[in-house]
Length: 139
Image (cartoon, one colour):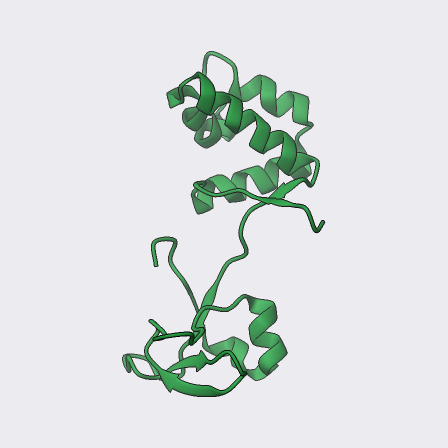
C-alpha cells in the first residue's frame, strides 16, 4: 500500500460511515444507494455529499469510494497531542528533528513535532498513550 492516495475533505462521521460500509456493503450496492434519488437512512451522510455536488465533484466522490474500497486510497491517520498536565499549555510533548524531546506548547515552533499517530506515540513509549489528546480536524 505504498502508492495509496490520501482522501481529504471528508468529515470524521463520513469517514467512519465509509469504513463501516466497506465492511458491510458491496460496492455496487453503496454506489446504487448514493446515486439514487432519495437518501437511504443508513447512507444519508454520503448521499447528501453526493447530492449537493456538481458533476465533476460527483465523479471525484465515486472515484474516492472506488479507490477506498479497492485499497488504492485511505483516510489520513488520526493525529494526537501528548499532553501531560491538563490546563497547562506548556506541557505538550515536542520532538525535534534529531529526536530530542522537551515540553512546550502544542504549536511546536520551528521544526518541532507535536502531532503524532498512535503508532508513533507507542514507539516513543507505550506509557505515553494515556496522555494522548485527539487533534481536531482544523488544527
